[in-house]
Image (tube, rainbow, N blue to C red):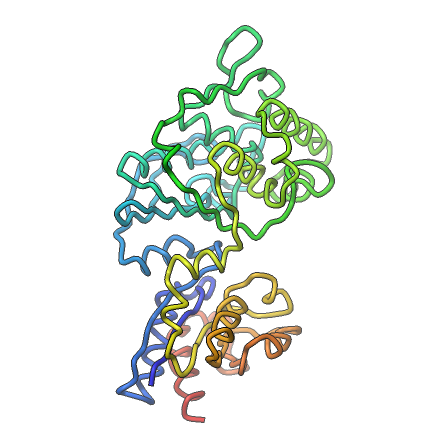
Length: 367
């Protein structure tokens, strides 16, 4: 028998790889001669780089960069020959900034530009990006500046790529950007469909969770609109995903020709999930919690959809199965399986997560 094991991470408990390994042990407890194909997954959020790096068999590269406030740090990305995978969360992520220090006006995405430059310098010509969890609202100008773009003022002076300076910019000069970028393909895991500006834009929708006050929203929204006008790519500002990561989606599309794709589909392609499912008798997936939102681009739904296309039944394992999760049973999922005893305290469940998942898989297969 063949089992394809394609879980996401179980938040605060297991990485996707650890979850796949626990599933494999559960399968082999019941079917010692089974073929287990582990394909750690992600929908572009937590565990994105780890999942793709593991699937590629690549070694992580640790490079010096900066966080959203410009403070030095080291961030890891995956490099495999001429392809690389990285994310914004590791260098310009919100969780890297203490709540008391969050300051969107003085934050930018330069750290991501530094990582891209490092990867391109090492020969990467295909870069896969996860852009969830950013601390920024800079329309990607920090990234562009780190890659060699110049933001010029009225008298030719260089302007710092921080939102509180955007009204001084009269030209975005990209002539000095790394020449290798023109030969580099960017694929972006992005489930956000918001435009750059307006009531549904980056600032209005995502700014408050980054510390943007109600009074600052129209000011920052106007700053992003100013950047779009200067860029020469104003139509891109209205496209779905332009508002992702504080407008980083706009810069990636407009200046780097990036393709924005649903996260789980991009990861599935990158890790070769379709090939892993071929010939399988059962596909096992899961994550920490499933609910009514799981169908909206989360890993279990994406894996189930691909399994259904291949005619293979799919089972979802989760630590918590909430209201609405039963909708998955009408979208390619054969069964939903709770991991761990129903009355187990959360702290204990987290401590024994891998054992519980192994046991849940074995018990299900025996039934």
